[in-house]
Amino acid sequence: MAFPADGGVDVAASARSRLCPPGWVGIVALGEAAIVTVPTGSRAGILRKRLRSLPVEVLTDPDRLRAVLPFTEVLGPASLAYLNECDLHPAELDTVDAVPRGHADLATLLASVPVHDADECGLAAITSDAFVSAVGTM
Image: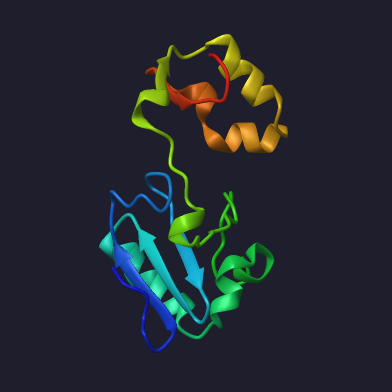
C-alpha cells in the first residue's frame, strides 16, 4: 500500500495490518495523503464512502473524525521521525536480551510512564519473553 501521490486517502482491507491492533482501523497521514487499513473488505467500502470528502488533517483529529465515524477508543497519535543516516545509531545485536514477562525491570519501566502510555503499549499483557536493549544491566 502506498500513499496517494496526488494526496487524498487510500483505504485497503488488511486483516493482518501492522498499522493498528487486530480488528481496528489504522490511519497514517503524511502531509496531504493518508493510508487507512481496515480488517475486512466490507469495512473498507464503508470507510471509503465516509472519508473521501474529508480533508486529510481531519483523519488524525479524533474529535472531528468522530462526527463521521463513530468509534469507542483511540490509540495515538504517534509521531514519526526521519533521520539522516549518520544520526541513526542502531543497537548492536549482542546488546539485546530476553527477559521473562513480569521481570522487575519491566515493571519499573511501566511505572515510569503515564498510566495511559503503559496501558497502550501492552507490555503488561505479553505472554512471552520481552526482548530489550538497555543501557546498564537488566
